[in-house]
Length: 164
Image (spheres, one colour):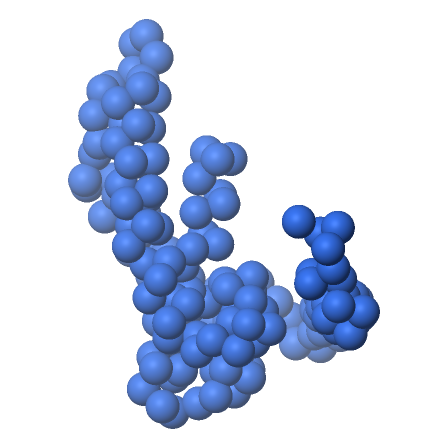
């Protein structure tokens, strides 16, 4: 199960692909399309491997489609999250920043009004401060990486004779 967690890095809307596309000046559509086929192949192989080798003595063998259907129905609002981001982005309705804001608004709406897991008065400030810390950490890493990249380019280190 933990090995399958890294498969999410191949599918939109994942942060590493977006950051790489911005730094490398590649369109998001190209990045997402580039990761789609390898991602689907790896998910299929992981699913096959898991269903083939997972049962231990006494457990039912095989994949239960009814159980999967029930689980997908329970998670329908979470499964819509990437669709909101991708539809707004690829339909030309929003820029990447606006699509991210729209997706965050959708997630906030689902948690507050549909699931009622968050109380606006009690939890909103805590959630927003945690989000601010997370975004600040990502921006700090991105800023340092960009600064170091610009230093390497300015110092012409990749073109130096000792660099190979």
